[in-house]
Image (cartoon, rainbow, N blue to C red; front, top):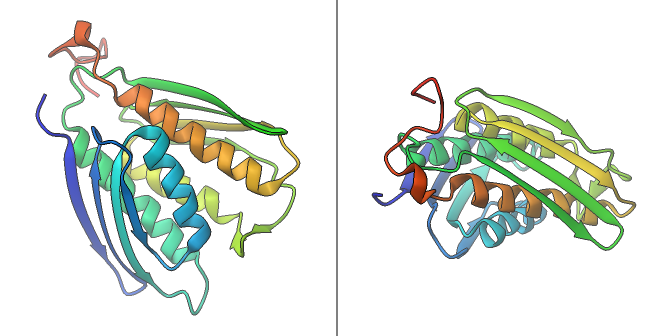
Length: 197
C-alpha cells in the first residue's frame, strides 16, 4: 500500500489553515491553532489513532473560536479523504469504548462515502478550559462532511466535562485506527458489495 499521507491548505476570509497527516504514523503531532483545549483533543486523536498530524491555524479568535474549530474539522476531513485514497484493503469500520474515571464514551465510524453524524453528548458544563463545548459538534460536522464518513458518538456516562470530552476524542482516535487499518485478507479489494465507497 502506498504512503497514506496528505497536506491540505484551506484559506478563507475567516481562517487560514494547513494540515498534514500520515495515517500510518506513530502519533507524533504538533499544533498551533490558538485554541489550547482543541489542541489537547487533537493530541488524543493523534496518540490513540497512531496518526501523525501537524496543524497550523490562524483564525478570527478575536470574535470567538467558532470559525477556527469548524474549519479545522473541515480541513482535517479533507486531509483524511486525500490520504486514504481509494480505500481498497482497509477495514472500513471502527469502534471503541474509552473510560476515564467516571466517564465512558463510545465512538463508531464507517468510511462509507456517506456523511452522517449522530452525536449524543450531554456535557455537564457549557465550557471547559475556556472552550465552548458546543463547538465540538461543529468540529465533527466539518470532519464528517469532508472525510465522507458516518460517525456515531455517544457519551454513555460522565459528570466531569473534561473527562466527557477526552473520552470522546480518545475513542474517536481508537475507532479511526481500527477503521483505517489494512486487512491483509482484503488486499486490493474494496470493502463494499457495491464495488466503490
